Image (cartoon, rainbow, N blue to C red; front, side, top):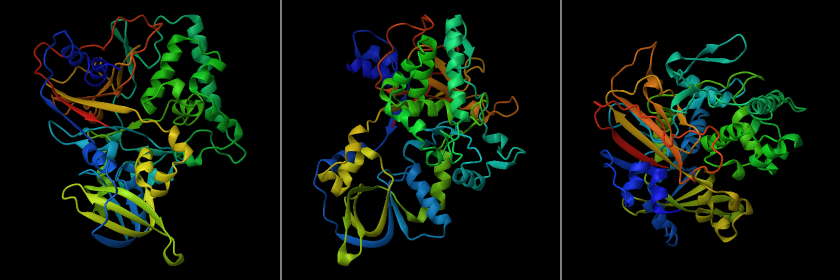
Amino acid sequence: MFRRDLLRAFLGVPAALAAGCGRAPALPPGEIVGAAVGPGHRLRDTPPPTPSAWESVPVVIVGGGVAGLSAAWRLARAGFDRFVLLEIEPAPGGTARAGTGGVVPYPWGAHYLPAPMADNPGLLTLLREMDVIEGTGKDGQPTYAEHVLTRDPHERVFAHGQWHDGLYLSAGANEEDLRQRRAFFAEVDRWVKFRDGKGRRAFCLPTSNASDDAEVTTLDRLSMRAWMDEKRFTSPRLRWLVDYGCRDDYGAIPEDMSAWAGLFYFASRRRAPGSDPQPLLSWPEGNGRLVAHLAGKVREQIRLDRAVVEVIPTDPAGKRGVDVVAVSTTDDRVVGYHADQVIFAAPQFSRRYLLRHERRTPPRELAAFTYGSWMVRTCTSTPAPPSRGCRWPGITCCTTAPRWATSSRRIRRCGTTARRSSPTTTRSPAPTPWLTGDNCCNSDATSGPSWRSPTSSRPTLRFAAR
């Protein structure tokens, strides 16, 4: 990939033009924030140091993202507080962190939560603790507080110079396009209705409750693209919809992910065949609200700016344990922890660098893990973008241009907006190839509509690389 292509994927067309022979206006004032890659790279490239001091603690949690914080929260709820959580960053949260500058808080990354159904008791416990759930409906499903339900939750696509409701571009579709769309969602409904011999759904959250029946797991052995080919789903419009779903949830394309994962996107959040997906819950700071709540419950056990450099299984005197070596990223102090157990909640790719036994002989499954980057752009604009055309979210068909969501969609109440300035969050996988070949809508739009008024002030951008 050329530098100009990378800049286009990260920062948009103006930056790409500025990097080449073309001239474009300068980017608005702002900043780039993201993960602390410096300490990670430095520690990756040097041998693990020897601790100057050791502490004994029953449990060490490696990683302070949502996974690590959730593990800590569950231990605390169970009345167990003899643990430490080690996080390399100066703040917990990982890809769910949030920023606080500007008009209102804003998400760095994850910015919504599909409302869980009754079969997800762990998450429902957390949301009740946060006063997000108001009660239980006659169908046994939880009812959610109005203030956390996303306003205008349905997506729109921009094509042919105008907005169209929904993610599927019906305008201009022929009979074969529509037939394939009906057939595709009939397949989705079949999987929504599916129950195995133990009464388990094919796709649900948490995934540990999903069926492991052979009919379901077979889907994990072919790609979503191959499944579409097998079902003879060839409509460019339908293919674009599936491609969008794969990029939206996984940052991948149908060729690079399994049919199980692709169908999970469409089926797991539906209660019954033909029903709408579960509503979305959000806050101005996105899932940063969840991070703040979880971290607040275990604040005394969190150790920030601690980069774990080695995890060593031990067996002293026949008693199995784990030693954890960590380095302070602020003063280079090396601390060791003698633990009975370790909860490893760091990204999978870090295992081969941190786990001593896997460093020597990496497991085969690690080779299958690949990570794509995401660039989240937060823009504060005055006046706020108009309601029409900026629903939550907006997507440009049929390109890989970013999608965007206005923060006012998250805090709007009964048709009123709380402020005039509105942070807008956009995100896109980066780097990513531009779609080529047949354009399903023959749209000449390449970067979406412009909602900025001639009198609006220049926006302030923040780019969060995760």
